[in-house]
Length: 152
Image (cartoon, rainbow, N blue to C red; front, side, top):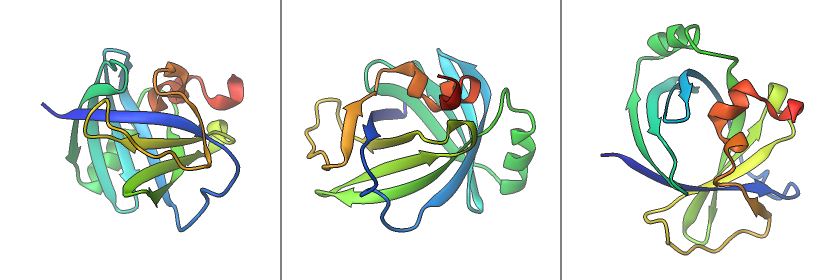
């Protein structure tokens, strides 16, 4: 089984705006809290991802590359609006932080994520890291598709 162990934090300031970012567009074929199914496009690549119910920072995750043309057609089938963001991958203390700057109705929201090997893995937080929001469901991308940041 594929497992994702990921912690999520808000971001302070703009020091994280280093290096180029990549536009990501994603939509949800299913946003049930027990299981989400999304299609994501980043550049010329696309993936179909299924995620299970979160338990703390851990959940089942299965991700498969799909042809870009198929992903574009699947986006038209999605439930709710797309979530769009610019992602920057920032190395820090031997680990990579993914910082997502959301666009559209989610503009103003910036979230940093780190994928871990185990739920209790230690890491050194960057100085620009804010409060942890790992278990706050409103920060899940699937939630942002139905209740965007601009409507909080």
